[in-house]
Length: 472
Image 1 (cartoon, helix red, strand yellow):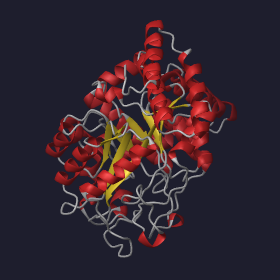
Image 2 (image 1 turned 60 degrees about the vertical axis):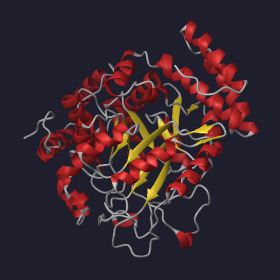
Image 3 (image 1 turned 120 degrees about the vertical axis):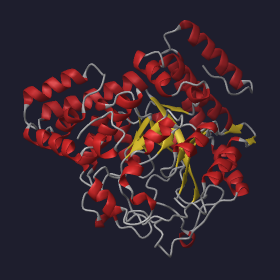
């Protein structure tokens, strides 16, 4: 039944194919000749198949495992450099009709506070986010056709884009809402969204249906085929993700790579991002009740193997993970992180008390955005607030072609430095500003194109003089 070009969920995510790949990986986890041949192919940095990825994940050879990490780091450096894109989530509503067993928003949870932001409350939350320095948001909402209809989401997007406060502006709104129709995806596209994000949670159909016993999300096929409908609706930047810990991690890794292969095979462009959240504590949810939780060591290997398998795709790790864990995976493949995040409905204007809890999950990394930016600068990274590709129409296959050719560096590097300069001028603490200015001086010298380098330096000087929003 396996057919990566099929539009039927159980054919492009075929259970038999996944189990065949896992069985092959188990039998060959010590096969040095095979693993070395996969690594040789992987060093071409054009990706590897889901079966080859399964073998690398299972590999138990010490020397080859070190090579896997080395390769993941080199792919990250080659395609994304030392740039780390910054964003923040904004939860609009936690009203939900689904019965998901791992999420505190499930409709049977009677002691979580249900809340929905008005447009004025959204405005105040966005101003608070702008005052931190954020330029990119991911809006989130529970699935509830009465409380959270598509019209509410569209109005919220219009509100967010319309807010200009001091030097602040949200330049890209990514959307993480429930699977919907082609018509609604077209409306989201026309509203100017960035990436449409939808986590699969688990690719195992049987587990999926058990974890989603009631509500529209119970429909495995409709949920799994959502990205196809989004593409048909004109959204060519989509973000995949699974919630590691719900099901066997090996199965999920093969499934998410198969999903990426499907999008590439059917639409000619793979996912813009892949997220790798792990299940964590939340109201009404005990992670220990899920027996598939993964260790930090396995988590790091998952990040490495995904980076090798899908080298052109951005990878996201959120504040679910601790500072220590995030630091370990940054150079293994992660290209986007959240900072200063709140997972409650609102919570940026005024943080909720424990009694007022409306959060989806507990935040492990509770540092402010400035503390996160300072930390990244100290590690040698460039915190980037860039949204230029989206606003210049470099999305979907246009973005991927530039990335694969290596030409994207002539846009991303200077754009990252210019948006960092904006942050330093408008929002940074003195210590962060000092570190950031040194990074800008150093990284300007890395730009090899003399025309781009000269123009970037000119734009950065103009930002210092008070002008804003330059981009390549």
